[in-house]
Image (cartoon, rainbow, N blue to C red; front, side):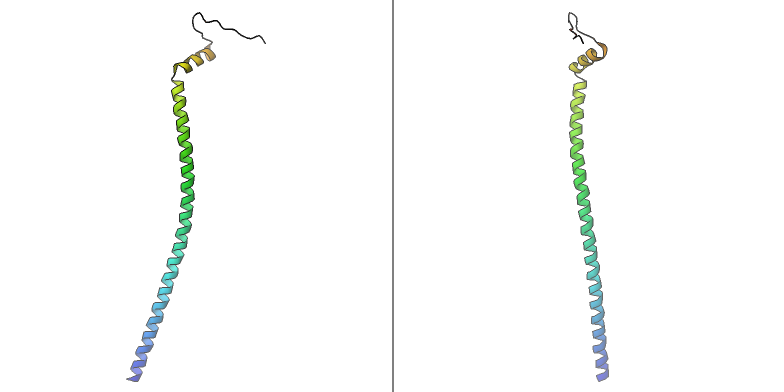
Length: 100
């Protein structure tokens, strides 16, 4: 009876030690995973900040392009190009050129 009791106590201690080892191993794995996830999160935050800057820049460029499109389709632009490229003028308009 005594020997059986000792064996049960020994088995219980072994089981407790085994549970403790597995618990420590699981906690270690969780901590390791957490650290890796934090690093990945920081990396993703940096990428997101880069994309936000790029988005802002592209929005400004889009705004400039819309303004340019508006100007290119205006009467003023057409007149400017006709004067510059083809030397056209309005009827009864006099052009003065400076001598070099």
